[in-house]
Image (cartoon, rainbow, N blue to C red; front, side, top):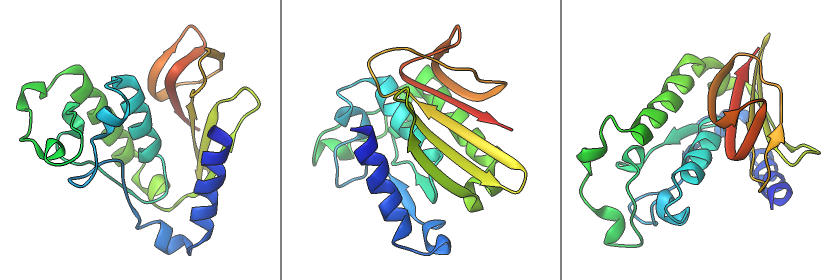
Length: 175
C-alpha cells in the first residue's frame, strides 16, 4: 500500500548521506527485468505515473531504451526487443518528453533539494522537494477514486481536470 511504500522509500533515503542519494541511478525497468508498461499490465497511465514519481525522486532517473516509446516486454528475451521507432512523436513519447523537460527545467531543485514523502489523509502520495525559496509538490493518486485538489499553475499533469485528480493522476506544481 502507499503508506508502506513511502515508509520503505524514506528508510532507504536515510541509509545513505545526501550526496550518495543525490547520485543514485533510479530505474523502473532494464534489460534484466520486465518493462514497466508490462508490469503495469499494459496500462499507459499507470506506467507514466510510476515514471513521473521516479522523475521527482532524489537521484537520477534512468529510462531504459523504449520506455519512452511505451514498449512492453516480459523477461528475457522479450525485454530486449529492438526499439519500436513507430511510436516516436506519439502521445506516450510526448508525455515522457514533458517529464524530461520538467526534470531539466528544475534540475538544481530536483538534483540537490530536500525530499519529503508522505501519504496525505485524502490518500494521495505527496512528494515535496525544496531548495532555498523554491518548492515543488507532486501529487499522485494511487486510489481508485477521484480526489479534489487545488493546483495553481501546474508544471505537469496527468488525469487531472475540473479540480480533481483522477485515479492514476499526477499533478506537479512549483512555488
